Image 1 (spheres, rainbow, N blue to C red):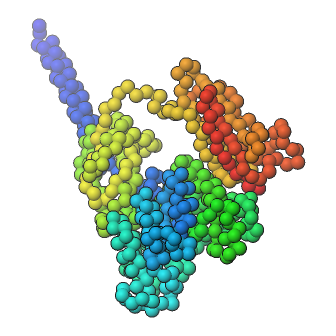
Image 2 (cartoon, rainbow, N blue to C red; image 1 turned 90 degrees about the vertical axis):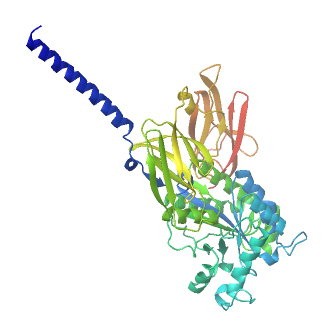
Image 3 (cartoon, rainbow, N blue to C red; image 1 turned 180 degrees about the vertical axis):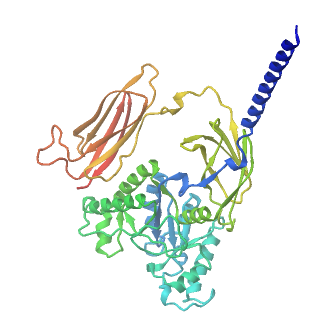
Length: 498
């Protein structure tokens, strides 16, 4: 073995060792590459990153709010804001005029609805003297005592918002309101901007109906117009607030109208509205929440800051803070957090709250959508190593027929449905048909074998079908659409408003 061979052999050995060291260094660099600076937090404009926000705001604390509005809201999983005048709520029935009772509104609060203030006596605040907290007939008395009594009756909740009587307010009234409340609601047709510097002139819109109002069909034009108003609010990513007073069965509505009550609505009309809003909520277009909770979300969102405490390949720690009163401002914010590319499933923990989340792939990398409460301690994200999950996780776990959108519609609407996996065959026989009020079939939208998945079809009310008069499509009114897959059958209703 000569010297040249030894030198060449040693040189190759050194090169190999250097190459191995570079691989090890590169591996270490990759495993530690997700630095603190790589972690970004972006709070969504609205909760669950929905496109817009919407609130039901009921004025006066009426008996019909408990008897009629509450069951409909509960049916769709919505929470409303009920603005009450404490002296007019009795402890039991019979109550005062058409007003409800304290046990009714305490139950509403326990079910997650907001009980807010409409002052003590519904006096016009703009003409009252300023006064003080103990002098009746003054603005401060009306504002303070109402909040005080509501919080005494419902001690586990804060009364944070006010609806101005008659929607009358001015700069002085706003200033006095700000002493006791986080926001004040007035009226106005323009939905509220998604980012506000001032919360004491919130717009709310009461639907105005044309006469006559003897049947539900008489009010369908206003329903369709109101849904267009909501649609424009969605396009502007705004916050729409609906002002509501009496809500009664359709049979009772003409009498209330003749008595001159302010813009009452029928249970049936309200149910159709909630049907439509629910469909758009499921489509991530509308976040439905109480006035107080949306105010909390907006103020926290616009004032919070984050700090990345630590970041490693398997765990990230973040702290979210704001400069607000934690006793009031403790609503969870929906926030996107950037995570390493090899994370698919994540364990979320904060102050004893635990959730399992799924990574979302975006053009700029992977993120996860979390619910973080500011000033509630460090939030930790931990990579979960879950194996054995294949593409079936994206397949529907059940058959389901969704509410059509838009609803009411003119002339066309979209209908979405899900088909779960068929264990015996790769496909399932699916039919989707439309019927009129008499149960007569007027359209077949789907009649074929379908593999597991979620689908969407269009129904056009201006198109003709067999059995439909050639004089011009379908008439305005209520229709039913039915999904049938084997023994599974589900039916929903929709409204064509021409």
